[in-house]
Amino acid sequence: MQQNKRLTILAEAGHLPKGTLQSDIDALHDDCQTHGRCDVQVNTQHGLMHGTLVEKKPLKFSLWQFEGHLSFPARG
Image: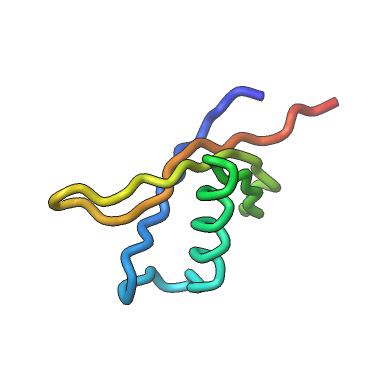
């Protein structure tokens, strides 16, 4: 499966983007701590995409975030 979309979720406490649930951010954080990465699936207007995110801790001027790539499943 070729990666074709980059996904970044900014997860700064108290400033979640519209449509983002704190429970989703907590689940991503817990999964990343346990496994070192988070396997995700996202339903888009073009269909279901799968991917893997990693947690990036904030540096001096950056926000807490999850980054990774998504792709559509191979058609069989």
